Image 1 (cartoon, rainbow, N blue to C red):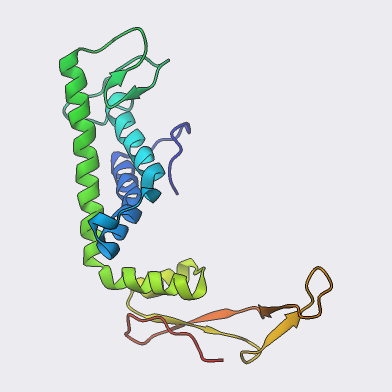
Image 2: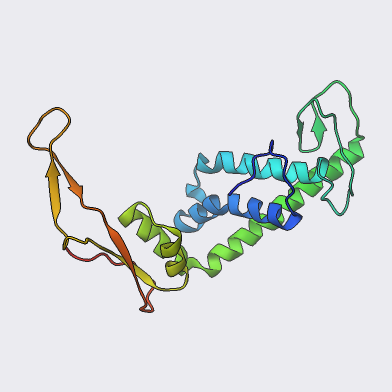
Length: 198
């Protein structure tokens, strides 16, 4: 679960930094899979959210070891990377530069953390991607199985049969709909995801 910036809950520094790392997961995975030259704009919102959390950690929540438990900038205006856009400037240029540096440090630290985690678990990453391509959705139990190095396969309770249902317009051709599926987690030590042949 990601933290909306407007919510008023107590979150630890560790949790916030883990959230920042998680937000960069998609961009890092894209770079690893397709190369840095093929990175897309798909992670734009994740980058914006990660930057917002880091900014608030430094300027609002007092979670910067270097700048301490102080609030920086005017509350009525947005502060981006340490610079207020309001008419009332409450911080010096030196402090603004320090804020920028601290935000950058938080982002860089957690980007590298996410990159290390993904590279260390590249086999699970590939297996998860394969499972999502094949099955479109997988649940927590199946994700845990894949992360543990096991494989999952799809089993149809009716023996793998499909049925046709009439289309909304009365066309007798209908469309293929699979019966309710159950997914069995196999204990075998494999990084691949298999589907039972129909």
